[in-house]
Length: 512
Image 1 (cartoon, one colour):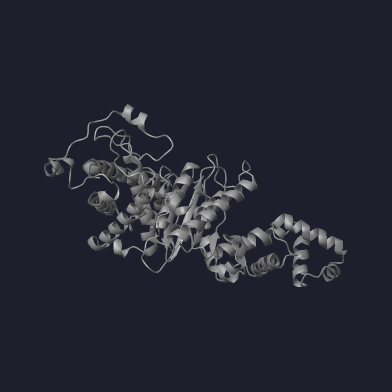
Image 2 (cartoon, rainbow, N blue to C red):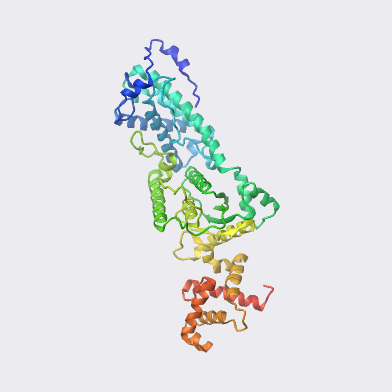
């Protein structure tokens, strides 16, 4: 990142400074200790003190000064939420520790180890540009470099090497600047040609049931086709800060993209709507190549990672930044791990409802319901799963001990009660019509109907049908095979009863 000062500008002020001889990389490697932190510039004068406690104190102090200066000199930093400030603090901390580790390899402006800033994640991806823009990242980097160069004595006990240390800081900051631009470009590439306006248009159109040529053309350019299978999740977004939410969304996009899938997400009123697409034949519930134990372990790691990050980032009412939590020198995780935890997905993991659920749930508020729509194909199918997930979310308030995610099919009766035409159609066609047999007596339908109308009494149902109670039991088990709903379960009996009443009303009045 370019800085106002340059080594050439600073040179006239240090004409009396005795330059250190340029040392070879080979000599540097030979003299560098193999079992300790690389905090020296090789043989000769060390650039940075070897006192780990002093380095830690210096990092904390530099960050405090930088954050105070950002508050005073910029109009965007003070507007960040406390949570986002805490997360940004950890990213800054990773950058400073990265510099301290790298500077141990510095010999001269022409001779030093390659600079790798991938672990820093010193920029905000596209999803949370509304919180941290590229220009603001440059502001933050410039301020931190200024603070470090003004307080070199905190990192080194030797005043004769401070100009070398300043040169190293400027070189490192320039690399961070290029890294910033590259990460922004990569984030845009991962996102594809989607932007917020595209996604908002797609989500609103699908929720309204508008799947005409305009929508199809827009979605086709993002690889959605009539053969694509889709599933939607709806819930309140995680409210712990735009920065955290953006990192969650960016990681989800990368994971789904690596599995060959697509993602479209946008806000609808106060809710987050997320639509996943898969080019495969369907989206199975689980991946047969991964055991249940693997899925449980991955879900456990994801949960523990979120808890750890929540404890560190916190929702504290004061603006004091968390204490240094960086790992020892030389162990630098990326900011995704720092903020979101270190959950990992298998390299060969497929798109399944299980994997998508584990990726999607962290996007949503942990104390609110999340509803998942059914898997559907094509553009009309994408609209159907999204509408089902939205209406299912609104119906979740009627469910005691609501699971996360709640399947939209589990609240079909409630959705039908407040006018969801898709739910009424599913109850009528998927249950009532399925129970109707081609024979005139409709034995299966009559058995389930009488059983439910009699409050679940086998004997009374058998008596009215003039059959043995075991025959009723057999027919009830057979009905479960046909519809997937068990009349002996109280909740599922309610679903079946609603479907039967809708069917009976439609049979008596086809215009309904």
